[in-house]
Image 1 (cartoon, rainbow, N blue to C red):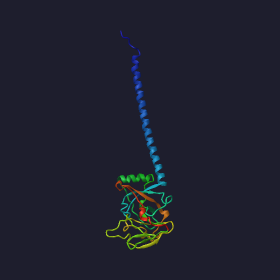
Image 2: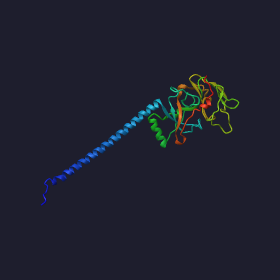
Image 3: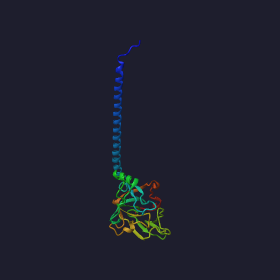
Image 4: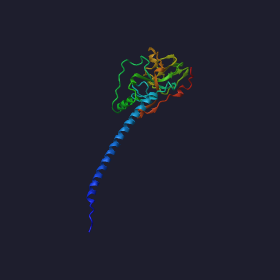
Length: 257
């Protein structure tokens, strides 16, 4: 005859209680895991903002291009990354593409604000939040450095070329009207003063650069203190991505004054 274990009826009840406690522990662990995940995401986000602000403060900054004065090197609405170590820690070189604040009178008083929408607008908003994008791009200008302090910049020689310290320049980056070969439609001869730059747009016949601002307080020169940095890459749109050259061969024969 088979004996009946008197403890058997209680075993099922204990198993149920153990199972319930195990499920509760699992839920608590899952809940804690979700909270830790959210906490880590927040910490990573805050760290990214702090790092981005540090990068912006000491290294790089982003700008968008609002005009066609630097075509075909830069197109309207291109995004560029600017090295802010130039010129304070790294010297400006001839041929550099630099971003600078309005020296005074170069830009119209009522500059229209360009509103970006869609994905580009959202990205710009975030980059501005962390200090990398520049919502004040309309208050800055971008041109190519032609003359450094002490340089004598002239246009044009018998071949329609610009000269710097008497050396003619062959400028492959220029965008000229069809049938035009002169590097500038205006003749001029200037000597760049101390701590200043002479800058010109690559779209030479459609650029309000140093040539057309000689009646402003800066006399057409850009004070070195107004230079924000050197543009070194087109970062957006992806189809325009490229490193920006300072074309050292163009200025290779130019001696410093």
